[in-house]
Image (cartoon, rainbow, N blue to C red; front, top):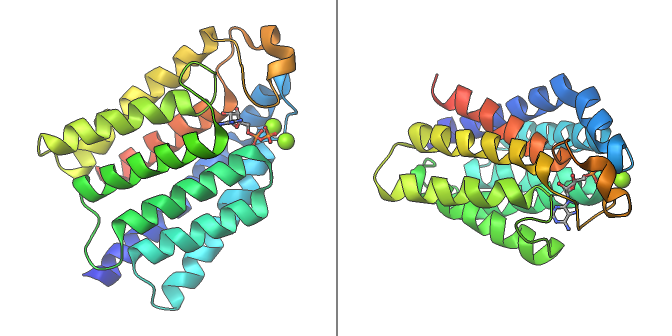
Length: 213
Ligand code: ADP
Ligand code: MG
Ligand code: MG
């Protein structure tokens, strides 16, 4: 059973890679409006490295938590850029919380996402309202925790949290960036969502669709 869980987790890392591949040009264009235009390519490098590392971990007999930790290490080493460091951190935190012993469930995943959210905020120092992925991560995590506490299944809880993430990402269009490379060109980004917020929402939405299959 723990072997099945590890393979399901690795399949989700592949879904992340596929989702990034499908949106790589869109993410680059979005980042070029007020940033340096490398968000698509950076996410692609990171997610491809993470997918390969997850496959290697599976071949070596790793459990679900270890698969995610190896994927996170590879992501941050290979992606470069702010978002790469933050995605690597998030996957490592999530993997540590899930562990290798039990199949991931709503409560352990919610705790892992909360740890990832705390880790990203303490590393990157962005607050809600600064127009970064934190604007999506915080409501995503809060919704997941709330749904897990009410006893929802992982698929149901993640689906509801993903809907909150999509809405939060769209709402970043109205914000002015105060962090990262977009800050000097702040006003140009009005009307466009933050690229890191948008990619986060695309990814958690795609994972939700697979979890409910
Ligand atoms: P870089 O900014 O290094 O070129 P990317 O273009 O890949 O990296 O990622 C940009 C995204 O990273 C932004 O859209 C934002 O969501 C996120 N980001 C930037 N700085 C921070 C930060 N300090 N905390 C959280 N997220 C951040
Ligand atoms: Mg960039
Ligand atoms: Mg860059």
